[in-house]
Length: 191
Ligand code: IMP
Image (cartoon, rainbow, N blue to C red):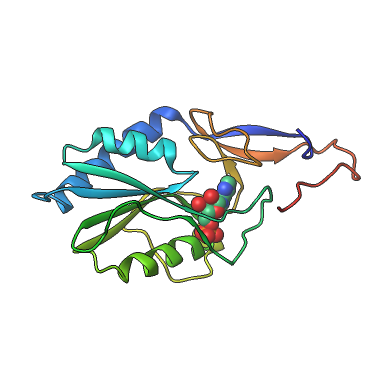
């Protein structure tokens, strides 16, 4: 790995995540009770583990689709410009839609996707995010359901990466730079 040496400290255990998802799934089932088919839209790539666990807790007819937006590259800083790299395969018009995000940070990604989807006139459009960092918000977007509110710290695991690493951790961990790393150690570059 080329980035500065770091270690990961557990912040939210796999058990806590599973318990929270069970609760959230119950609330989503109530909200969408009677739906013909809920279109669950995962925002790639960070939501892939969350969406997999969430849909398996839902006793509703679901279709799963994905949107991929431009990401941070390999940096820890948010890029304000959001681009759609991959759009839905199917139509959202007249559908019950649930957007699944890993983290709402500045909120630009979610705001952009919601504007896009609203323009397609879904019957109902709701959002869920596993993590929320309200201290970092630059937009007034707010997910309808939040798994956990977290402080302004860079996190990894449970599908979420740092420079494409650590997505396979079963828990959410905070990234801690090793203090004894030399000052001239290479920073992670944006790409
Ligand atoms: P936003 O547009 O600033 O809200 O950024 C949302 C996206 O940034 C998330 O979907 C993540 O992919 C990424 N992101 C935000 N915070 C973190 C973090 O702590 N670790 C890894 N990725 C993050």
